[in-house]
Each structure stands twice: as C-alpha cells, then as structure tokens.
Length: 272
Image (tube, rainbow, N blue to C red):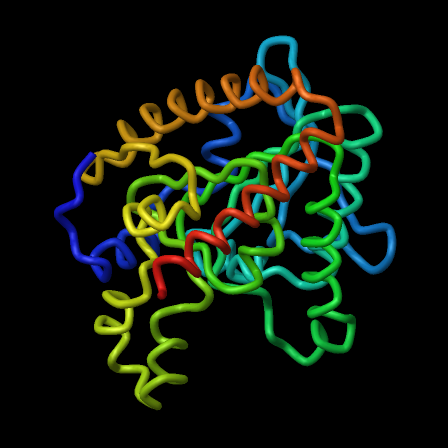
C-alpha cells in the first residue's frame, strides 16, 4: 500500500467520474445478484440499490449507494444522494436479512443524503436515524465497504457495521471538505486545506481505529484495479462471514456495540 498521496489527491481520485461504482463491484464480487425495489411506502429511489446475492453457497443481503457516470445516469441515480425512501428500502432489506439469517454487506459511495425540500418533508433526518438505529441492533453481521466518497449522514446511515473496510483511495468523513471549509472558515475555496486536517483518508481512519482494514488499489489502470479489488473484497467477505457466522445474535450485537464504544474511548484518550 502507498501512503504518498495528499488527502486532496485522494479526494480527487475518490470523486473521479470514471471510478468504478457499487454495481461494478457487485457484478465482480458475487456469483449472483437479484435487485429488489421500493420502500413499500413511497417509491423506489435508485440512489441506493439493494437485493439478494450469493458467493458459493452463502446468501447475502447487499445494500449499495450507486452513482452514475453520464449526466443521464447521475440524474437517474440522483447523483448518489439518497432520499428517505432509499434508507427505508435499506431498512426493509436489513430486517428481511435478519429474518432469513443473511449477512448484510453495504457499499458506501455518496456525497451525502439529498438535502432537497421534498426529502426533508418526507423525513430525511428520521430515515437516517432509523437506519442507524436498526443497524445497531441487527442480529446478523454487517460488513461496510467504502469504495469512493463517503460523506455525511448519507454514508453513516448504512455504515453502522461490525467491520468497516475502505479502498485505499476512498474517503470517509462527517462532510465534504468544501462543507467543512464553508463552516469553519466561511470559505469553500479552502477545501484542499480542509481535506488535510479532516483525517478523511483510509490511512488516517485506520490509525484512528475507525476502520478495520485498507484494500490496496492500483490508481493507473481502472480495469486492472477492478479485478484486483474485487478479488480482495470477495476474500474479505468470505473471511468476515466465516468469523461472524459462528457467533450468536447477542454476540454479534455486542461486538458491534463494543466496536463503537472502543472508538469513542480511543478518540477521547488521544484528544487529552
């Protein structure tokens, strides 16, 4: 793994319009994938895709934030900014996974939850909070994979997991560098400076014990990178399931609780 790029350079790689998307990885990692639609309440928001997947003889539930490459695709996917119905769809699929004892795999790749008036009217904040609450108490293991840009509550809403891994050139943060600079300095043009102090790279977050593992990447060849990363993710998922499916529901929930409890205690100690 290479830690010789600046934080802003990694932000630019994570945002690259040619970077592989969740569906690209799902197609390579899993033997089968059947997409399920709708939140059974309002609509099917395509910024999050979800469904049933399989590796060998093991079944999974997959929930993934999906962005487009072309303008048409981005409009269809709402620029990977989920509406409340996306999170309610995710909750529906997670509860279904719990019923049938399927591990949950989430792919994180979003600038943040959609901040439009309609989304707020339909309960955006409540949907995000409910998703995090349901994940915290889910009786099956959850693995979250940050593959691109993981920002704000839009990412955290599907990131309450037993284990979190990041692709080497992905980012994971409370908000975008532009948003951080706007709030802190009232100047979004200082985004590069903000990125350097936000601790949003995979290396920063591994040091802070917020994530559990970095998946190595090749930045110069996207197709080679797709195959390499997909193989590593497939291996990581199989290893994760082998470890966690031996645990009972109470142990799985307690493990998830202790993960975030320990993160809080670690951050408190290093800040003193």
